[in-house]
Length: 262
Image (cartoon, rainbow, N blue to C red; front, top):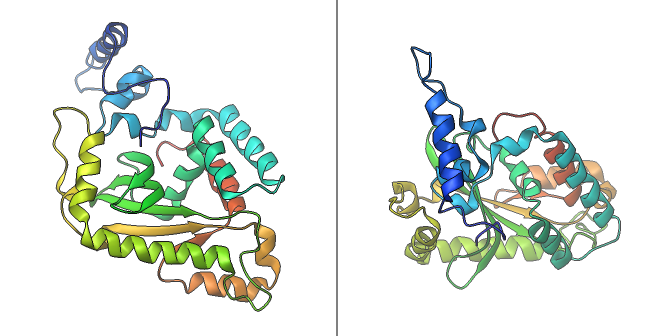
């Protein structure tokens, strides 16, 4: 569930704490009103300040144009090799290219007051590939994400869902049922990731289905070109989960460049 391999952001080293304190001192210096210099904090401190330090999505990375373009280029090369689902997951997780998943925040009105990502999140008998957690003006909301095969056609010639999408949508149905049965298990998983000494907000404790959203990612853009009008009609009318293909993630990730928040 922890995103980052080489660092535990629930603790700060002495050096990181000293750097953090130095920046904090300048926030009030010579000013009548406090200025926020969050973006100047050491990276570890930016994580440490948040509810889930090891799952925080750092907004400062949105300004790294070169890195985002490199992520998209490497991702495009992999897609061109006809990879499987596991290859896509390994690519994102091993390289920590989580912006590809975080780009889905663009479809929701939360994430701009705090954005987090959990991988392989256990909801009691089921494992979610990715779980986005975002805070907006109405509190925290949750996006459960299923990745399916990127290389097999997503729609048959008659524009009905092919196996990969049917599998993904069935997985979402299983998740919805499991979450309603075992929501206390979900809360316990979040507690394991919470910053020590900090209580979970009520959104993580109350079984509010209205705060939960679902996404299935499968197939490629070319699979939608069998019959574009009918295919996108099917997508628009899908009420169970939002449906995307893997090429969408390149477009959405590039849109993150230069943004202040997700």
